[in-house]
Amino acid sequence: MSVIAVLVPHYIVGIALGAGIFGFFMLCQGFFIMHDDIPDWFIWGYYIAFHTYSFRVFMYNEFDSVDSFDSELFPTGQSVLHFYSMEDVDIGRDLGILVAYVVFFRLLFMFILWRYHTGKR
Image (cartoon, rainbow, N blue to C red; front, side, top):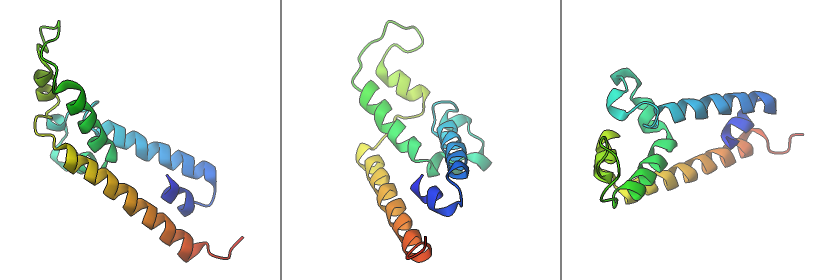
C-alpha cells in the first residue's frame, strides 16, 4: 500500500487502486478459487499474491494436527488440506517469502521516496 501511495498524485486514488489490487490478491489466494481451479493463464496471480503464503501457513497450522471432525466431507484435518491443495506446505519457505516481500516493498518504497520526493513539497 505504501508503494501505491507514493506513486499516485492523490490519496483517494491510491486507496481505490490498493483496494482493487488487494481484492484481486484475495480472489487468487486459494480460498475463493482453489489452486487447482485457477486457469493456467491466471495462475500468476496465485504466486504473486502475498495473501497466498500467509493463507497456506494459516491452513497448515490450523488443520494439520486435527485428527477428526464431525463431518462426512472432511473427516480429518488432512482432508481439508487436500481439498484446498495444501498438502505440501513448507512453513519456513512461505514465511521466508513473506519476509522477502516486506523487505522488497520497504526498499522499493524508500527508493521511490528518495528518488522522486526528496526536497519537494
